[in-house]
Image 1 (spheres, one colour):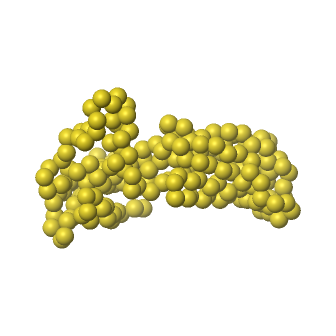
Image 2 (cartoon, rainbow, N blue to C red):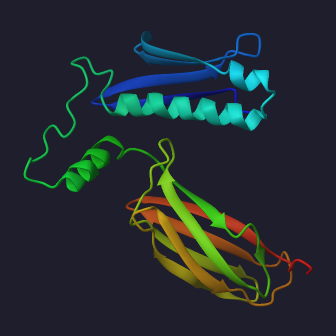
Image 3 (cartoon, rainbow, N blue to C red):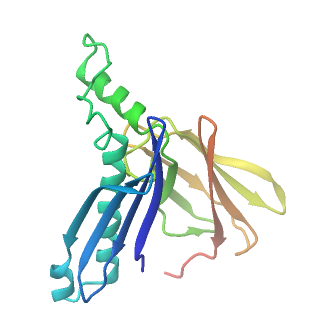
Length: 216
């Protein structure tokens, strides 16, 4: 179970520290604090008594804890705690641009430092000798916003042949990349699939073993 998060966020030349923690079942509250130079700039406290009352699974509390922490990180990146106050939306962007471009520029400016995260949505396992639909999703690590244009390659690694690319392409505007692969018959545990995702200079790799086909 996740009991808290601690994140340092650089914004406009200043380092903000954001801390979110569960105060415990005796005081069912999620507390977030934003620090700058040891001074508390902001706090947010939300009760989770509703979860405690119905004995909700720990994962529900973890999800609520993480969501509140992400919101506090985003507040910092959007300038909510700047000394001069939060800047107006679209400030410094040429007004003749369309609204969609204004939004894209705004996100690019405020979320550019966020790490890339890639997850496998399908399949739940890779089975030898099977045709398989593959769905990958690229998003920001903190905000979970979709990331388009991520270059993705799915390679097969096996001791009996050179590594080869089974699937490649870019994530779409929803951060999704999908395709179909044909896995050759391979002895279980003797081969692996590796996804390499690249966005600029950032590279993320994920690995899975190829398993025996499940029985009908």
